[in-house]
Image 1 (cartoon, helix red, strand yellow):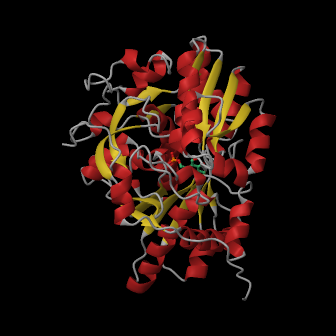
Image 2 (cartoon, rainbow, N blue to C red):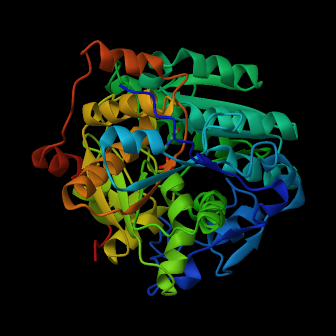
Length: 460
Ligand SMILES: Cc1ncc(COP(=O)(O)O)c(C=O)c1O
């Protein structure tokens, strides 16, 4: 290949002083309100008191807020400034390799201390808990990005942190455990025999590889039993998505500097937080008629909650301890195959994202993992960043669209979230490169079996 001597602008940066100072809450702008969470006993809308054993009041108020903007506290802004504003890159070399007239932009969140977008919410969650006098936070983690982020945030604010990591990922990604311990947190593989929920699963399935739903049950159980301990969730809930909107608010400013508006926004979805974080500010602009991007979620074919799951009330965890949330779900008992994108192995989808999908404001597709890793490798060999396995799903969809543009001659603007690097996920790349990686597609019979365990709540 001949060396290209063209000098391009590759990255679009904002000054620290240009960083947005409010999070964006999409709820008041939606044409229809999202269905409320329900108390599992009364089936009535859950009130703040139902969340109070687990979360501080500031976060509960954000969870149900009707305010369009919520100011980011100074103590959070100060920590954000360590790595924010994050860069927006134009993928010139990937575009060239694809031979596409499309223009591909990626917002890179791997510059954070944990290596992903997760500190955007870990920091405010630790901040509000510290303010409320809480001593310790418990949580689940899949790939380990969220556990690392919360361990980092707890270290900054002087909180203890205890993490249950999905067993399959605990074995696949030992360096995440070490990083979490380096930040001072305690970590256990899940299911563990430290909790009632874990012991129950182990009694039935001694070889269980775990799931995010089980790990959530374990972390929630410990938080609910200890007055000085709260629980922190890394995705799914409204307040988590809210905190991530700093990504999209920055990307809007950065694209405006280039004079571009996106035709397509693609993001990977586990529980929906990086996807929401990037896309919600753009959806606000779309709802206001100022731009009209297609917004597409990409999930793994082995855990396709949006594209194959049902839209119904279900528990957020496996043991059934959380309020019921109306969401796209494969059933809270569902254990996905131990694919390498551990952060996308969640049985449900954020209620807000599910509502947007139901009301036609976003699209969704599912991708098998080998296509995603092929995209990740192509991205690494052109752009030089090894993506985390999760955003390879978004990259596969971005590349698919860019190749469509090559066919049609359209020069669409494609925007995606490169929500983390894969430096601690190299075993997954090794499995792909050695040919050992398999695809797992969930067929309709498996979906039917999975959703059979849904709680008896009207689906309507
Ligand atoms: C790098 C990365 N991307 C994406 C996800 C999926 O979560 P979400 O859909 O909330 O962004 C995770 C979850 O652990 C992750 O670590």
